[in-house]
Amino acid sequence: MSDPFVTGQMTPGYAPGRALRIPDPDEGQPLTDDMRAAIDAGHVAQVVVFCDGCGVEHRADYTGADKHTRFAAARQHLADNERWDTSGTLDLCPACKAVPA
Ligand SMILES: [Zn+2]
Image: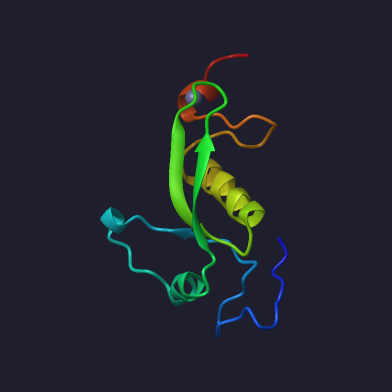
């Protein structure tokens, strides 16, 4: 993953190309300095990923300089932490990926 340095869009310690998931308040995790910098820079937005099998939605806030970066971060998060299959052309929730094609 590239980590571009964009002059003029930087706050110290934060690279806009870096994609991070912002924890939900009820998770009780503190925000990191990178996350605070991204929020200050306006590089946080809610991303919604739909399951292509059943249509269930997963939404969370992600950092990233543009929507493509944020969407990629969301799919990576779902694959790594929520047991989704986002490796192919379809995004499948854990229930749907278990169904044989
Ligand atoms: Zn599904």
